Amino acid sequence: DTGVSQNPRHKITKRGQNVTFRCDPISEHNRLYWYRQTLGQGPEFLTYFQNEAQLEKSRLLSDRFSAERPKGSFSTLEIQRTEQGDSAMYLCASSRQGSPSGANVLTFGAGSRLTVL
Amino acid sequence: DAKTTQPNSMESNEEEPVHLPCNHSTISGTDYIHWYRQLPSQGPEYVIHGLTSNVNNRMASLAIAEDRKSSTLILHRATLRDAAVYYCILRDREDNAGKSTFGDGTTLTVKP
Image 1 (spheres, chains in turn blue, purple):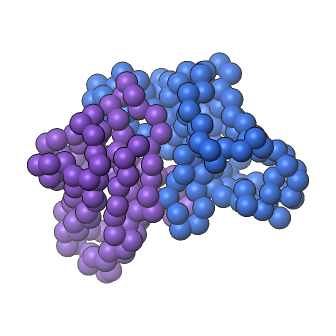
Image 2 (cartoon, rainbow over the protein chains, first blue to last red; image 1 turned 90 degrees about the vertical axis):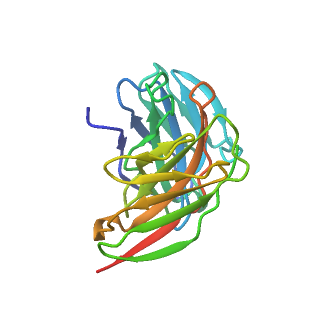
């Protein structure tokens, strides 16, 4: 397994454009999380899926943001009408329910860096 | 969800032990204590976790206070590659595990 894969790694866009990020979790992981991180800050939780069900969304996730995980495998995070304040690193993580330790360890991808001009 | 507090930064000399503290006074009985570290331009990487007892793995040791309101990540011999931001977070047992709140972590600088 190659770990959590995120694409694209970098995206530069103009204000007002739409962008989509993809996350491929570790294959046996049924939980998937999206976080956003700005420079010098820790990751901020955006949303979380268990299989294909979106179980929790942060208030940070405005109506311009939408996340999907249609078949319980990969996930996409779309940002519509991007604003300069959306510039950040978007991190995806996955974890496995039923792990022997019960501790639900997160495995993160390398992130997708968004720059909105 | 419960929050953690950590010092903003710490320094260490190479090959010396480093003790990174974390306070989590509102921890609940089902919360695991997790530590992750983040190198520049990478996603956070799992380091270690524990529930009540002290834990050791190949990367580090985790010492948990008896009342579980604080913990300490111990790097036994810091190397230059250990320079990173270290995050301490709480994660509920897996049946209820959802979001976890990250603080701003501790930036560890290792001097040669």
